[in-house]
Image (cartoon, rainbow, N blue to C red; front, side, top):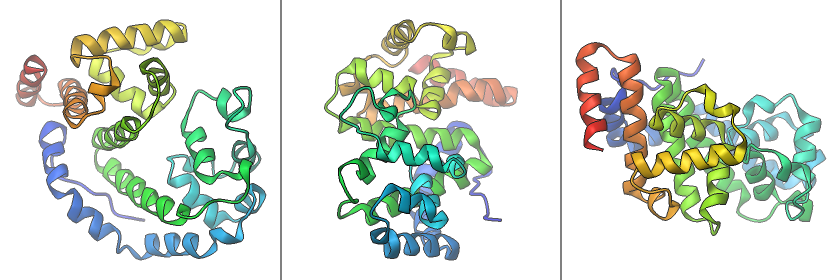
Length: 258
């Protein structure tokens, strides 16, 4: 069993320690024997999977491919994953575009099977993403909130490079379960919001973002400052719920200062 990455403290203090040690921790993790074996196999053999059918037949290739996009729980759903990979991403009616969870769309875009065999550079990008996801997973074994914070930072950084409207990107947030959870907690939303229509949810998230994060525009939210504000609000509210009384005071001050 792979060891968890722990810091002895969670919440805002744990986040500071994590950020300061992240580069070193990633370097150490990159030398992990099992992880290196998995990524080396992917690099050496992805060219031997020119179709989606070839990929899903190879458990080792598929496990790295899905793990790189946070979809490792779908490793047994080979028929479904094949349909995702073969979906026409340019067709709004295709399966991959009808799914609310846009991680499947990112998977299909990266592999590009609908347009032919995977392109050059895929082996490197997927291997790097797999390492980052594995780092997040091991952090999550020690503290799930820190894993969600890392995931949110990565997803928001990816949105920063997207040429989409704010409305489109809010729907992406709503359709990305781990990222959505960070926003929900940062805003103090309960489960009842998920029962609203999707358009009403987008409206409520937009209003809450303006109130708690100072903007609802991803031009602001996807900056380093915007991401930091989101993560700090998320961790502070989580700390208020989960921590002993003495730690709740500092968390409350963080929310007030935000």
